[in-house]
Image 1 (tube, rainbow, N blue to C red):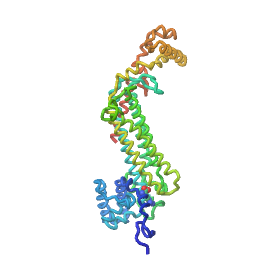
Image 2 (cartoon, rainbow, N blue to C red):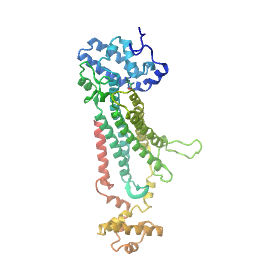
Image 3 (spheres, rainbow, N blue to C red):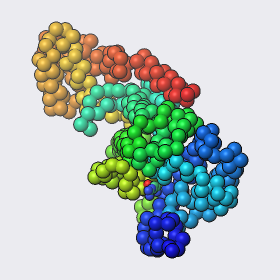
Image 4 (cartoon, helix red, strand yellow):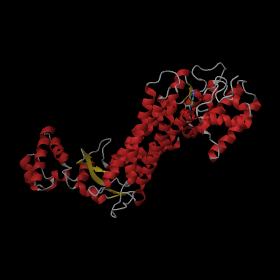
Length: 464
Ligand code: ARG
């Protein structure tokens, strides 16, 4: 006669101590306690509705899980690594407190559909949370943009001064990227919103579970359609991690720009003391650490995506224990992107723009050279020829150590007969910007409309 073991009658020996420690995941997945309890409550209620669980058993389950949830929230729940994972810990605690009903709760359910359900609930919630954090950053940028409509600076391509721009238009570019980042999270949340409960370990269950009922109770659109897929697939998490990786890379780019703009060489921004640090050796230093660490942490998020891609790539159907490794990367990526967005939102709200430095950068570097070419093209000169003429004028200005606006009209006329005195008007950066009056361009009214549009989109989401 076999002795009683943790895994029941099939086993004569308990799990080796080192193996047990190695397999245990509760240190990581205890974070799913809320989702696990939520799923169990829905399952129990449904079991009662189909007559598998007595009404008084349901009451006991609800009472037991309720106290367990309270203890988890209070941080007093006695997590036990010997009980392997969050599911076993919660179930064992329920059985210890409420007796046999704890053992009945698992009727028609496996940890395979249970954990898949928990992760979908967690991932769905995370999409909303991270999305809100991205929106907070977008809101901070829009608020700054509203006050910088008339702040002019060069736009860059290849890191070379390219054309005059409004700071508001520049800031709104980041807002667009954040808007898409949020959209990707919303898309992923929609697609993952199906309930695996009832898929069992791999091929469903013999109990006549009401899957639509548990799906509805948990806010899922419908039950999943295939039990193997539901228990063995984690592409909903890959999608989340991919969306988070793209968002992290976008945050990193924004952070990099803050680092660059904080340099003495640029000097376009000064980050607040609250988001910078000094040096233990060099008393003059004010380092943009918050931005640097956001930039650095993006590497971990991309690593999280790669980790789960590699975990899943060789797995045949159905569930394999390798899938337990899905949690750490998902938790890490969610936390990292949410925290990065929130800290950047505060840093952006608090930083100072050096309008004088931005404006001064416009005065050098021939940022209005395109205007010279456009001027001739508007008078009928083929643009390629006009571009050639403007290029020669830039070369001449370089030779003379002047800016384009400082060359005399005679030099312009020498270059092309169609130049008149109004060319100097066209070379005013403000005029150059205002003439870019098409959708998506930085003319003042276009930027004001873009700000209103960005605010409306953010408000519509806030209202949801
Ligand atoms: N901790 C496991 C996981 O995260 C739960 C499912 C375990 N299933 C099993 N058959 N051992 O994947």
